[in-house]
Length: 190
Image 1 (tube, rainbow, N blue to C red):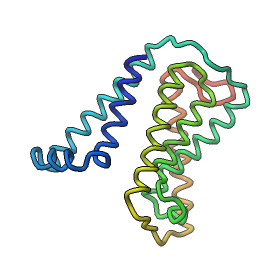
Image 2: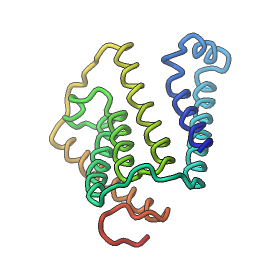
Image 3: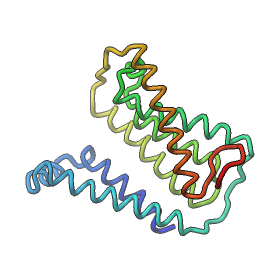
């Protein structure tokens, strides 16, 4: 559990550092250069993911709440939505006009989806901690930056986003199965 907590804290700190500590961040960029600073934070983020994965995979946490079978269907629907949200920010879809923080909404949706189907303490700490980070990030960005709306998008962009989201969703299912967890409510290969 300690590794999960350290990983979530490290992840959150690395992502929030620029906004919460602009002076030290500027000093760090002055000392290391912008590229050096980005490399440092990338290394910290990779380390945080390694800690979270190691802690989660090696944990035998108690079950805090049971999850009904129907939540698997809701989880999978939310996961497809999470992937689509995540893609909106870099798309030429008309949906991009509607959402200020699509990647953070996607990340939050991913965390909620996993909390629905995982009632063990390790999952609650991991996905709940990352959900708290994503929501805090949204609040902090909204309090510091003015809203700038993207204008544009097309039906072709909407279709491209939908197709790419479905393909990535299928890849996620494949990887989940490869890791030994079949995520769909139908019998699978895991």
